[in-house]
Length: 63
Image 1 (cartoon, rainbow, N blue to C red):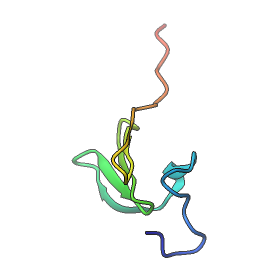
Image 2: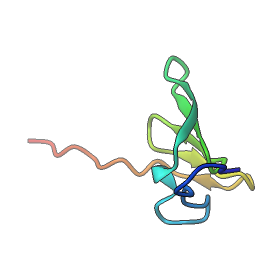
Image 3: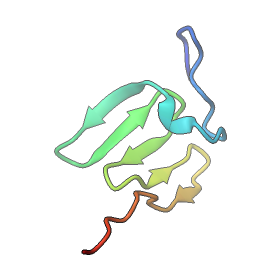
């Protein structure tokens, strides 16, 4: 999918979230990355092959 330089990390790469955003819908809570990953505001993801990555946002500490 990526057509620019430098090439974005692939959807299987651990740093896949560093890919360029090609469509952003903050009102709906998601963005499409150049590598085909759908990234949600809660940090969950759907990969191009349909695999789901659970949200992995750091939890806030309770004082």
